Amino acid sequence: MSSDSVITVNDIHSQLNPTRVAEIIKVDSLEAIQETVAKAIKENQFISIAGGRHAMGCQQFGTDTVLIDTTALNQILSFNKETGLIEVEAGIQWPKLIDYLVETQKDVPWPQQWGITQKQTGADRLTIGGTLACNAHGRGLKMQPIIADVDSFTLIDAQGNFLTCSRQENKELFGLVIGGYGLFGVIYSVILRLTPRKKVERVVELITADKLPEAFEQRIQAGFLYGDFQFSTDEKSDDFLYRGVFSCYRPVDSTTEMAEGQKELSEEHWDNLYYLSHADKAEAFRQYTTYYLSTSGQIYASDTHQLSIYLDDYHHELDHRLGLGEQASEIITEIYVPRPELPDFLVEVREDFRANK
Image (tube, rainbow, N blue to C red; front, side, top):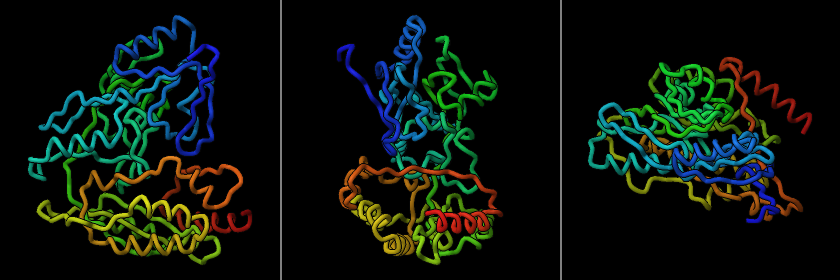
């Protein structure tokens, strides 16, 4: 690529962050990171760091920076089957890690198997380093964010120093880097604390938002591990931000059979739901509700049930089907609300959205 070429990068999901970078360096080793940082220091260049490129806040890019692409840092470094500690390079993505654990332990009895505790929902091709950078969370009903699952990590800081960070060593950096969006250096490797792998049963019901705080508390007290509430997005319906699908997962005995051919949404189903969520929101909610209610009672693994289908560039096809004249996008808004105040918050949002749509 010539020096006159313009290199532009963007996030995968919203595609709202086109950014010009000086160059992209795909590092594949600790030494490659150190060499890249040393070169940037010598040439007075700034560095940005990207992995799966799903972050929508542009924190993984910087104009005219040297962009370190970590996706080739994807090796398993060690796995202690006694302690459940696994060390991975920071560019590894969730599917490869989960597949490794499942394959490595396929001959191990269920009660002795290890699995991931949590991951982000909605997409899978996210790096472990990026997960730490935003201190991500999953659907755990009582779980803290990913920092709780991290034993330690190694870091190359802005001066090129190689550091080990844990709750005992460089502990201030440990807290700053996790959730620090790459500001404090490049993560090379991570030691994750795995959890005993379990079989879980999905329990689904339709409830309303005013019952949600009590329903979550009941599920927690009953020992459920994961859960979520997917509400109606049809602003014309009385169900809007009020009635929804309440799905939770409780552990069952490890001898419980996981039936072959369980119901699951295919890529085609998801593609159609994306379309209906814009073209016919009432029908989208009806189909989604019908499907989830039909899966109540199905048995899953506590790790692989967190995987999901993500359709790359789905909005290009969606824009075409909707007959839009220009490219549209979807962005995620994440709002933290104290659980007891959630029903009143949703009422206020519902009224505001209808008044200002």
